[in-house]
Length: 190
Length: 140
Ligand SMILES: [Zn+2]
Image (cartoon, rainbow over all chains, first blue to last red; front, top):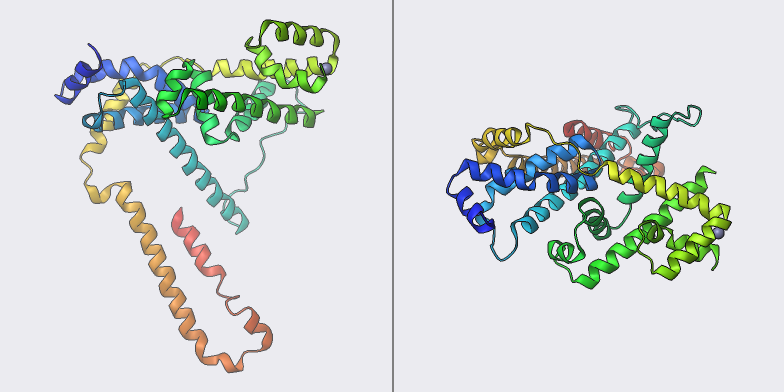
């Protein structure tokens, strides 16, 4: 079944066709969400919601783009919205702390005196995620699609609605910025 | 090449995307320079972690969960959906806020002549805590 047949089949109410669609795209959706939100539980939850939306807006799918391109866009939008909402929630939680309600956001336990491997990796990962998260949004999306999904630049350009040259430049800048941010952390650790 | 130039190329060296000649130059520099080598090792360890987040083992119940989400939210009437409820709630808070503002304005107007210079500078001082706490309380 090609994209068009699959979509037509889902719209006509064929459950099996929807299951095929989910199974064909679930890994790429999970990778994309994971690359942007970093937490497995959140990424899985988001991935499920991506397919709920795919199911609901199936009729709005335009066959002039590939099905995967359309699904990538939904996954990116959902993840970015989740990140924005999360930031808002954190802001309100810090308000609560200021006004004397709720628990203060304590920094995660220091591990400098307990140099075991798991903890070191955990810190390393947090630092890396923070560096990725601090990239401008479009650089972050392009970098994620490239690193987590191994997508060729041409496909990233399609998904993001940009020219190939813009995507090349975004990814190049993303890597330079990420490198710079990480170097700063290494120097701080000295 | 300077340390700075080398350090700017390390992320590309790591993925092997530099032209051959530059690959060789960076490799030679790393052989002889401890501080650039340390940065490279750190960067390599960090970027390797990205691999762990890729292609996670898949939840076998994934499709079932998607189906469940679709069927459990389908019957929800429009007025119960978050998209309608949340803006309505914020609108209510806003309306209450405006009402409160008008109330404060009305009550403040009459004793104006008797307030001291200092109190006039901070007219809403005593009341300013209440609405924001109320707002935050309502929010959670
Ligand atoms: Zn050097």
